[in-house]
Image (cartoon, rainbow, N blue to C red; front, side):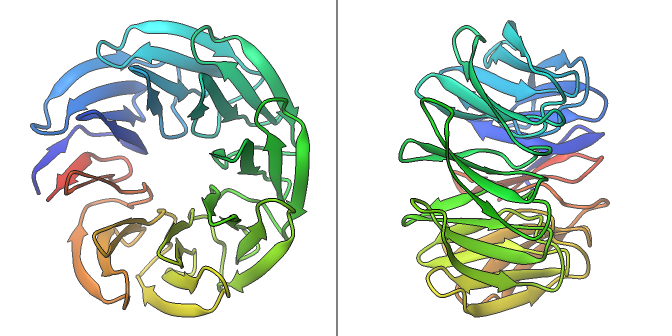
Length: 314
């Protein structure tokens, strides 16, 4: 372990430009130097921050349970603007060409908000909560909803291009690779869908919910499941390559670097797995669930143990 920072941590954090931005269940948001683990600044948030913040152009964007999307100076924490939505901001922000996209609880809308001013450009109504964070590619924004649909919406206009129905809620965030979108569903399936047409390519069945968000690299999709497994699946065919069994739910979303898959489990471990074979390389034990998605930056692995601390491992 390189360092450990804070307590009462939620699973929401992001690492950018040598700084880790880390929210807590005590309604605080910290900026932490990734080299030293020392606090740079701290602000109080009006309510709980549900999802990972995002950074672009020196600005930190985060949504809050109070129904606002906030933009603060990433160096100082000073508020630049806040934009009111109609409900809890449930998804992480996605940013493209000066626009921030974010989803909300009921009433469920995907909002497009000007990154400089906080003005709403458009909003798209879904049938239920948008907890799935938006993914952007080729002029389209993809996201799932608790209404069981995967949506593709035009980035500029907010008009629906297509929607694809799964068997239950989508809480997983979409991965986009090679013209295919991959997403998990609470119906226990990992779906591959053609990004242009919305037609199913394959559905890989796990034994329980796929809340975890998939990661795709070198023709393989990696994803966790509430059945306790981490799966590696062929990105074209949906055939299983390997699975690794943990001792509890895998809500954490895998991250991949240098041939290693990093993923957390509710069995209170962060795992490092060989991306080719699925064999365990090491595991790191903490005192609480690891539902956060690890971030790998410059050879260091950052993650949060729920209700505990932000860790840096090397």
